[in-house]
Image (cartoon, rainbow over all chains, first blue to last red; front, side, top):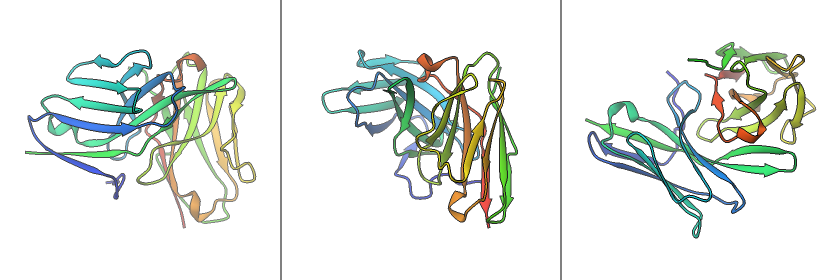
Length: 114
Length: 115
């Protein structure tokens, strides 16, 4: 099958442990930040988003933290499972004139070991 | 569950040939996006439609790439002529509207290999 991101930063985590994936963003004017999960051979899948006026948002087994002071975003996955193995991308939503668009960061490959 | 459909899933073509990709967004989604994803990188926006109108094509190489969404529903992205550097995954996404561009749903992509 297809291998996405042969040279991506890789995080290796044991099943059941918590995972933390980090991302730095560049535009302080971005109004939303989003995490996507991309499995091999598939398109990115929405995980969770956070508005710029928040600093934390929780979903099912996932938490996103936003630190606007240092322009840093993190995704925490609790009790990591083998099905969480994928490449994770952060994205920021920017307004450009009449349009809004997502700009994606560098992905991180999460490998879950048994 | 509604999904974004894309075809073909895989395409191999020789350089200088023409190639076309098709996308059908989630029903009711007015905004449609085409992205290119090079192996190991995040997706990069090529063109964005609001209904049948292009709202952003600043990153579309217009000498060889074209995109249309004639009836404001499905869309076609064309490359003519294809070059070796065009080998990539081409992703289509849709959102309810421009204001919800942060909530985009992606299709499975078309993997293009140019030989």
